[in-house]
Length: 472
Image (cartoon, rainbow, N blue to C red; front, side, top):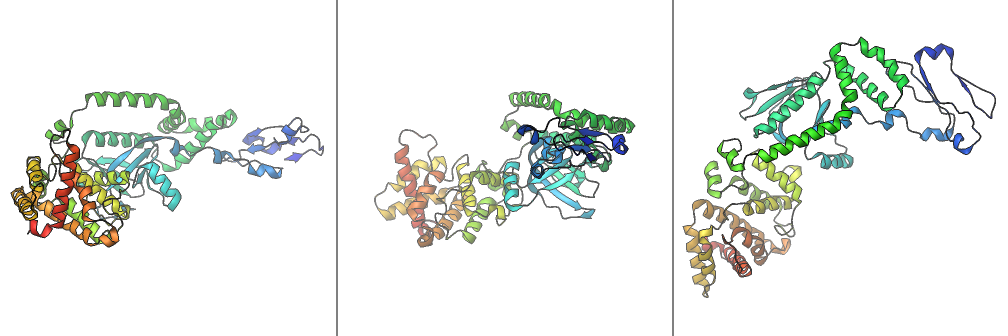
């Protein structure tokens, strides 16, 4: 490269020995104007196939200009095809077998890889910025996918095996969801070349197309023709995939709209066995019968966690936890996953107490059965305190075992909260206000809701203050 000695009009002369490699040049005809001075000429010489050298800057301020590779985002980031929650278990790492441990993951499928997040991608990306922890990623190039009924006692399980020897199991109890994921991942794998090294060339082709440089695209044209037909098909699909994004989205919306209008009811799916009875929203006696217990396992777990690290927390049960995290906990519990409330994602004890209150609110029939509501109200109206306590005690003893035993465990736990009232600032009255309407309500609320609320709070308070006598 030579530069003219004329200071008014800089001229670049291309070295004739390098013309065979191709060049993209931008010349400055007049550098006298202020605007033209800011647009110094640059040359990009293609020295190797798929490698573009950075322009040589002859001015100090040109160092701040963006290079092509910094402006164009990677191909994988532009083609997110599917995302959502699935159950995941990694059973091999680099060929080494691992202990199967199921967990709920937010799965993001792009054109070349799958990423596993602990929460939705938007939340995860904000955490990446804060902590620097990147999600686990699976390269689909050369990967193998198959159904794996023998790998787990769960239904709807398929396995992904990568070239590096990593093995993952993915699962969902809902048939149409897991089928959709299986075909989406299989289609992504089938579109990729079997040789991972060819992906780097695909990425460079994509960048060249985005740069609108027809001269450089022509340089690759002969190279594409030399490749195998299936590889060439894959390359051209990737180059033109973005153009069909809009039509793809419209097709997805149309299919989703049809599915929603034709979807069966929850009751129908449960009757056919496609959806299991869940923890949240199940009848108390049904849940206890399924667990062969009189107190739900989830209630015991929450109480144990609160008594372990929440008795002295200010406003325990009164302060609300993050609703999104509570819903995530609810999702995991409903999937009947092994729950560890000591995990760091449940570090906020208000999330645990919020989930426990939500469990009782979601019961189709409250902990105090509808048929007993008026009897408890009449009992609390009695003027004599001893008579009132004996009437409440008599009603508690008549309750079905799941209601009576769960009530005993819950109020026994709440008495421990009251015992630490000097630290957590939760008195008997405060807990009565929190739990009264949650545990006790009329089947058909009418205009006397305000009156009922007073009785609801008083019943909860009495059962707390006279716990030993009522549950002895």
